[in-house]
Image (cartoon, rainbow, N blue to C red):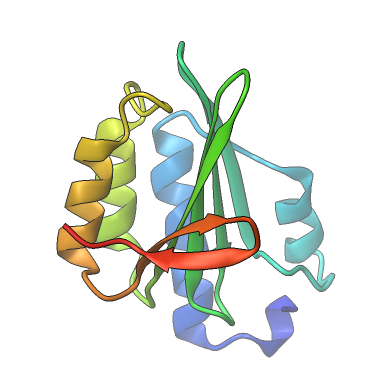
Length: 134
């Protein structure tokens, strides 16, 4: 989506992702700058974070109202997808778990996410979405 096509609320959510994740040490990708300059981007907010066990990626599409949380290790990755129009609770959980989130330690984080978004939390695997339940 292009910045000039977005509603004030969508812009607020994109800005919130940058503020919260940036303050927690996440690094924005160059695509964020292109979006700010008016280019169309499929994800308006993309941030990376590395902890000792994993590389984490956060992607947010305001138009689709989906956030992807990718947890990548040396040999595999998990891609969680969360449907939400309000990123604040999701970002709070993600930041709280960012130092320990890994392929071996994702359950606690995702349980919190599922409690917040019980009907819109998925695992994306082999081009399919699988709804997560407790």
